[in-house]
Length: 254
Image (cartoon, rainbow, N blue to C red; front, top):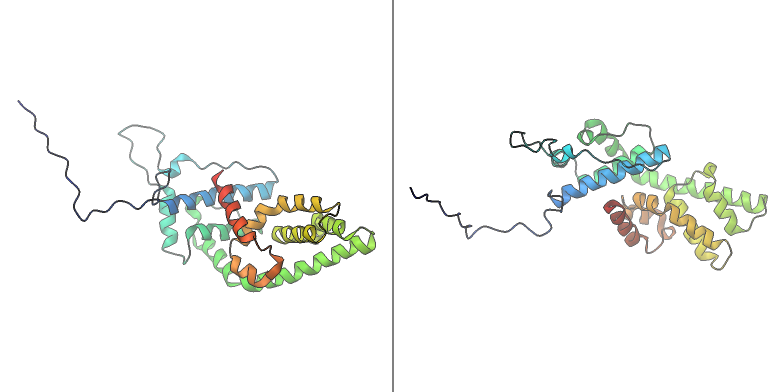
């Protein structure tokens, strides 16, 4: 008996190829892959921020829909990243990756437990982000004024009180936890002082200090660079927007 096999159906004239870049190397759509990378990166940074130790959070392969058993009998599992990405798309008015970054920004200032992937779209998490967005411009202005006043007072104490030169007074003010400066303010203050006192023996120390806060500064700034530029003005280094974007992309690829 001669077996006959049907020919593979040819694509229709109206068929279109998948757009280049739609899928990442992970096999997920590129926007979902970015969503996953953002969550992993932000979670590691938050765990490090809270514990003071390097955190190597690695998501379970099961979240990708990968089964422990490579057998045809095993039922295909749903990809948790795609599922949560779609849930967020239906509930928020922004990119899910941006939402995750804003949520973890809020969490860095709290003791709230770190949400799992499946909890990202919960009403509690969405309320945290909604409140953050609603008050962000007012808080940015208040933060800038308050940090400027605290920095000025601390620098004056080290300069006039202890007799240190201005450049070294700035260095100590940045390191002083009682000054209460954000990573972005520390970065900007260190960079500007090093530029102003270029050639000073303490300028190099300030540049190294700025480097230590660079990534955390970029994380805050890139949440809403336009708003930071509006409120902080020339305090933000002119080339920081491009540098911060590249820095974040590089950090999330590690």
